[in-house]
Amino acid sequence: MHSTTTIPDTLCYLNGQYQPLCEAKVSVLDRGFIFGDGIYEVVPVYAQKLFRFDQHLARLGRSLAKVRIENPLSHEQWLERSRKLIAALHEHGGATDQLVYIQVTRGVAMRDHVMPTGIAPTVFMMASPMKAASGEQRHHGVACISARDFRWERGDIKSISLLGNVLARQMSADRDAVETIMFRDGFLTEASASNVWVVHEGALLGPPKSEHVLEGIRVDLMKELCEECGIGYNLRPIPEADVASADELLLSSATKEVLPVTTLDGDSVGHGALRGKPGPVYARLYEAYQKAKRLQSI
Ligand SMILES: Cc1ncc(COP(=O)(O)O)c(C=O)c1O
Image (cartoon, rainbow, N blue to C red; front, side, top):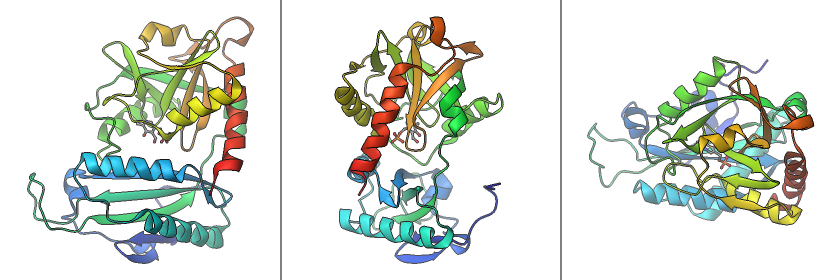
């Protein structure tokens, strides 16, 4: 079984150097370690090819700009380094579906909340095997719980300060559920590491883009897939009651792709014969997603 406590010796990239992951070290004064002062990205890789890489890099650029860290590498440099790590992991263990993780922190300085000037950002990258949803999860759907969104108000920044998300995710882990779906002031925001979608009268609904929600790369992808499938798509405020009465409930993320939620807080999702089962909108979006993976990966 895969263990998260054993650090493998696969290649990673740290500040200009490739080295075994188990040997990579940063300073205790790195502002990522001291303040969680940094941002990250997770890019899915299929058959050794990057999926929606340009969109992930554009979001990386937006996150960096929002926290005032200069983008340390060019598009070509990010791409070249990502590809080298993908090839190395493939040679090392044979995994072809992977995740490329990118992290940039403000760098190393004596501890002071004020942003120091003239320091180099810390750049870290690694590739790891993708842990895709199981066939059983796709067949039966997954369980989620709900909670108040108690995180900070800048969910739009893909910040490495993830304590709120960690606490939220653990609430569901403690109840053998795969995600915690959150509500702020009675309206749906997102889950601890996924965007959340409601199907209502055949259309896919998601919360509006805002500072409370991460703009997942799959938010725009879902729009494209809906257009392709002739499914209505709308981003609008979603009250808690609309989630409880949804025809279908879906999660999306780099690793989950699109995944059906069939129970929420122990209650079956949906109506009639489809109650507690993955629905038709999920099935069509999942199929379209698989096609997009084949056509759009670079
Ligand atoms: C809080 C949060 N929301 C949404 C998402 C989904 O984003 P993406 O589709 O880019 O993976 C993630 C992904 O990890 C996340 O952490």
